[in-house]
Length: 197
Image 1 (cartoon, one colour):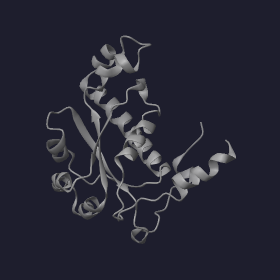
Image 2 (tube, rainbow, N blue to C red):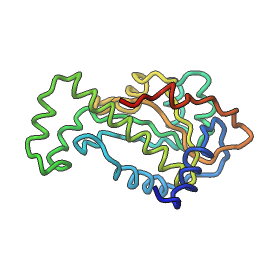
Image 3 (tube, rainbow, N blue to C red):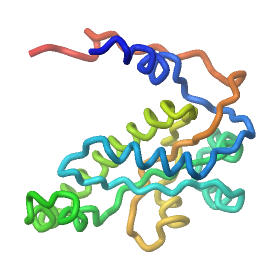
């Protein structure tokens, strides 16, 4: 590994923290476009790219989201300049003809899988893309606050009523208020989480 990457890794992982409080500095729409255009370049199985995002920025849209949140997530979501609703496209496989042209039958193959298997591919790969989103956001100078404390069926009803996508999580984005940082939680040591076969 190039030593030139060491400062970037430090910014992304060691200095990067989960934020629960936010400044009122806005996030420009152009930065959100850059965020997506960068994260989409990272790998997914079948190049499936099932991630679908709604960047919630207006107070009115935030209030549509609030009833789906656990109480501890409400104020931080209202305060954050952007809340990304992270979802997966339930028909992601229909795009494989374009995304995987070297395998012309990919769309038919994945579309022919049992619905639970196809859904698992969508959830796993959209979640992977959500991880890329958080890394890219930190790389662009944003702070992140991922949340799974929400009722995804309520989010779907409010934002994906046509059933085209299903919510996985939400991620608050913006410029964090450092004074709201909590102590960093412990991490598992290598020997507790890994083995070498």
